[in-house]
Image (tube, rainbow, N blue to C red):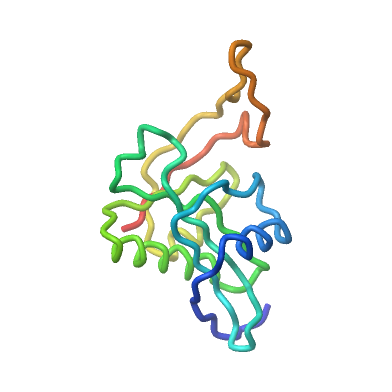
Length: 152
């Protein structure tokens, strides 16, 4: 891995989504976002992106909370920790009081701990959102336990 210093710069939605598609996370790209941050090396190479938006779960969408809905990295050292920290600083600067994210079981959480985040709760696997009265397509995250993390 390259030890080049990462620099934070804003990113357009399209560029963030293109990066997420190029470096696939375990689930599909986020549909909406309020903040987008990226890390570039001094050479200008895009190394990682974070997408932050309103919480996906309606009961968490209280107007004071944002959710990191996606991070993607090409493996650059500490890139996700840098992005989690920067996302929290940006959210606070905009007046938000809480920043959360969910991590799937099997994810170590090292980048979250490295950014000072704390584990809040575990969520059991869910069967999915599909019901006969309201058909929904799966997103590849059904039947996987999740963990709720919160910025310091």
